Image (cartoon, rainbow, N blue to C red; front, side, top):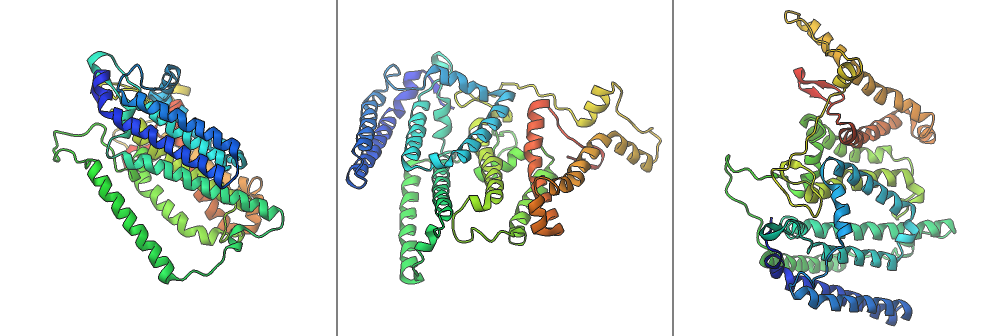
Length: 455
């Protein structure tokens, strides 16, 4: 974590931040030139020229290294970011990301407009530039929390991947919206208009060779500019805090917080692989093959986007930027204090039921009772959780088949429907368990430590 007084902290990054603003200025100047020369949109071109000039003015202010001149986020935004700290941070983060995805989906026709997307990209890049100068603490113990996170060599590719993922998600959505409009008008999708035959040699091979050279050059520059994120030699007396998995396993590490290793580390990943393998068998809707569309495959689209973006990508972002020492939640502008204690009293459902609601002790078998008697006592103790799980997996499928999924049940048949709905319900166990942990401190719905079986 970067530590010192504010002048000492900001000076090494001042020139880089100034170049960053100059890059944003050049980026918007090129956009303005494109709008003026190619699109004949002088009004929009003038607007982006003005935006470019703003970034040009900000560049020397950032290069000065003077904290009083360097642009930074308003204090009220920094204060609001503290909502992401502590136990309530997970709730706000989960609700916020879900609400953002819902808004983006419902307003997709607006957000896929190129100038709207370009404005959102500028806001994101501008906000990141302002965020890196936010300091925490006082005197010689000031820190740059956000700067320390995003400039860490491990996290630089993650920041880049977030923007790349946003771009490709926008691109696919824009094509899908255009195709939906064309199909509504009785026109073929855009992919049908561009069905020219392309040969592997020389077209594909040349393209792959150019990409290979470009990626090699990028990796060389990357290796020169950024230091390798090497840590100290492995030692049992020196454990990193926080100890984080590689970025592609951070979602799995987050799931381990809410489930036992056998479920989060084995069952859920296996179900993801099995579910992907089962898609060709489950897919009864032949529309949308070979072209982008949303309206013709709404259920498939929403399930995939929710599973991928909300239950995987946002968990990676959460683990990278908001999980700090002791795996506590920290705001993006909060110093990672290893001594911070976030008191969590996690309680099993059986404790809620017997102790909290019935005001009695948990059922226990006599010390000299046989194995059968002890097993029956465990089942009796965990009966509330077992009943809830059975209702969830046995009652919900036929209930959904007669209501929400009625048309799907008719088209898919019993076997394919049951396979689909069971995979769907198993996927939902993750957000359900996360919300229950964050709101009512529920640890396990079924807790049988005697047999290492917890759910």
